[in-house]
Amino acid sequence: MGKAIDAKNLNIYYSSFLAVEGVNMTIRPKTVTALIGPSGCGKSTFLRSINRMHEVIPGARVEGRLELDGKDLYGPGVDPVGVRRQIGMVFQRPNPFPTMSIYDNVIAGQRLNNKKMKKDATDDLVEQSLRGANLWNEVKDRLDKPGSSMSGGQQQRLCIARAIAVQPDVLLMDEPCSALDPISTLAIEDLINELKMDYTIVIVTHNMQQAARVSDFTGFFNIEGTGKPGHLVEMDETKTIFSQPKEKATEDYVSGRFG
Amino acid sequence: MSIDTERAQQEKVEPPPGPVSLVRAELPRWAPYGILVASLVVVGVLLAVTGGFSIGLFVFLSAVLFGLATYLVSRVVEGARKATDRLVTIVVTVAFLIALIPLISVVITVVTNGLARFDAAFFTQSMRGVGGANDLAGGGYHAIMGTLIITALAAVMSIPVGVLTAVYLVEYGSKSRLARAVTFFVDVMTGIPSIVAGLFSFALFALFFGPSIRLGFAGSVALSVLMIPVVVRSTEEMLKIVPNELREAAYALGTPKWRTILKVVIPTSIAGIASGITLAIARVIGETAPLLIAVGITTGLNLNPFANRMATLPVFAYYSYAAPGVPREPFIDRAWTSALVLIIIVLVLNLVARLVARVFAPKTR
Ligand SMILES: Nc1ncnc2c1ncn2[C@@H]1O[C@H](COP(=O)(O)OP(=O)(O)OP(=O)(O)O)[C@@H](O)[C@H]1O
Ligand SMILES: [Mg+2]
Image (cartoon, rainbow over all chains, first blue to last red; front, side, top):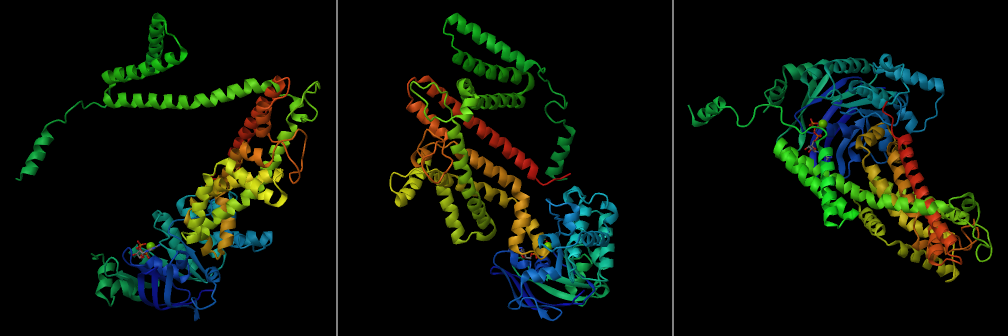
C-alpha cells in the first residue's frame, strides 16, 4: 500500500476548454501532499484526474502521462474502474448512500461490487475501517441506522471509512473539512496523520493552517486570469513553501497578500 | 460636510412615517364565520323576497358577497395587505371547492347506483345464459378477471421497457441524437388518443390473424402503447433527482457504471419509480376504446388472453348500458356496479402507490 504518483506534462480539458496546463508533479508514497491555490485554478480538476473521475463528466479528457508507481494510468487498455479501486476519493460534501445503513455504507465498496465475504470478516472490516476513521466509538451501537442520520462531521468520517475499507493505495481528498466545525476538522486531521502510515494522501484545502499542519509537501496552483488555464506554480516541502518559497506568487498567496 | 451625510443626519432625527408599533388591529377569529353566515342570510332573504330562489344562484351570490364583504371589512380594520390576503384565501378555497364538485358528484352517483348489484353474485357469476326469461342474477366476474389479466400483461410489458428507456435517457443518452429522438417520440406517444392505440394493436394482429381477430393480448399491447410513455416520463423524473454525488461516490469506490445504476441510483429512487408505475397502471386500467376494438366482449369467462375475446370492466359497462337486454334495469345496474368496481380498483392502486412509496423511501431515522 501507498504508491507514488507521477504527473508528466498533464493537460486537462473540459471539452475544448483547457482547465489545467502542463502539470509536472511527483508525489512520494506514504506522504501527505496538500494542493493549495485560489478558487478556479484547477485543484479539484487535477485531483479528479488522478483517479480518472474527471472523465465521468461528458467531454472531459486528459493529455500527457499520469503514472502510479511507473504504470501509466491513462495507457491503452487501462480500466478506469480498476484505477478507482486503487485510488480512493473523499468529496467536499459528505455523500453517504441514503438507502444504506452505517454498516452497509462502510462496506459499500464490497457490497456494490458483489464481493462475497464471510459475516465475521465483514464485521471485522467494518470495525477496523470505522476505527481507522475515528468513528467506531460514536456509532458502534447504531450500525444499523441509516448513514444520513449522523452529523455532517460524522458523515464525512463515514465517507473516509468507506474509502479506506476498499484498501486503496492512494486517498484523494477534496476539501474534506470545508463543511465541518473545528473539532470535526481536528478529528479528520488527526486521522490523516494516522492514515499516512499506510496510504499516499493528496488533499485539496483552502485552509493554509491546515495545509501546514497535515502535509509533508505542498503544491501551489495558480491562474493568470479567468478563461486561462490553471498551472502548478511550484511544489516543495511544506515548510519550504510556507517559509521561503522560490516564487513571488507563492509567497504572496501563503502570506495572504493575494489579490 | 457633504450633502449626502447632511441628509442622512436629518433623516435620522425624523421618526419614520407611519405607526411604529408592531401590533396591528386584527379582526377577531370568528369574524370570517360571522361574515359568511351574514352573507348567506342576506342572500337567502333577498332571493326569497324576489322569489327567484335557486340553490346554484344562492351559493354563487353568497360566495361573491362573502368575498367582497370580507375584503371591505378587513380593509377598513386591518389594512390593504391583510385584506388582499383574506380575499386571495377565499378565492383559492372556492376554486378548490369547485374542483371538488365533479369528483364528489361522480363518486356519489356511482356509489348510489352501483350499490344495487354490489353483491356476491356480481363477483362470482359471468353473463353466460343470463337474460330473457332466465332469472339468474348475472355478474361481472368475467369482466373483472379480464381487466386484471389484460392490465397485468400490459404492465409486465410496459414496466421493463419504460424503466429501461428512462435509464438509457438519464444515464447513458445525455443529449445524444438518439436520446433526443427517443424523448421526442415518447412525448408524441403521450399524446396518442387511446382509440388510436387500439386501432394500432388491432391492425397489427389483424395482419397476422385476419380481421376477425379479437384477443386479450391485443388489448394488453394497446394498453402498453398508452402506458409506456407514462412510465418513461415518471421514471425519468425520478432518476434525474438522484444527486450526482451519489453516482460519483459509487464510481470512486471502483464500481462500474451498470452496478452503480442498479445498486445506487435505482434503489435511491425506487419509491418514486414504483408509485409512478402504479399510477400509470391506474391510468390505463379504465381505458375503454382500445379494448372495445382489440378485445371485444364476451358473455362467458375466458382466462386465456392468447385466444378469443375477453370481457373487461369498462367494455362490459359500456355494452350493458348501450345495448341492454330485456328487461333493461338489471343491465343498467350491472353497468353501474362495474363502474364502481373500477373506481375501487383505481382507489386501491392509488393507496398501494402511497404505501409503496413509504415502504421503499430511504430511511432517515
Ligand atoms: N464540469 C465542468 N465543466 C466545465 N468546466 C469546469 C467544470 N468543472 C470545473 N470547470 C472549470 O475548470 C476550472 C477549474 O475548476 P476546479 O473546480 O478544478 O477549480 P478549483 O481549484 O477546485 O476551485 P475551488 O477552490 O473553488 O474548488 C474552472 O475554470 C472551472 O470553471
Ligand atoms: Mg474544488
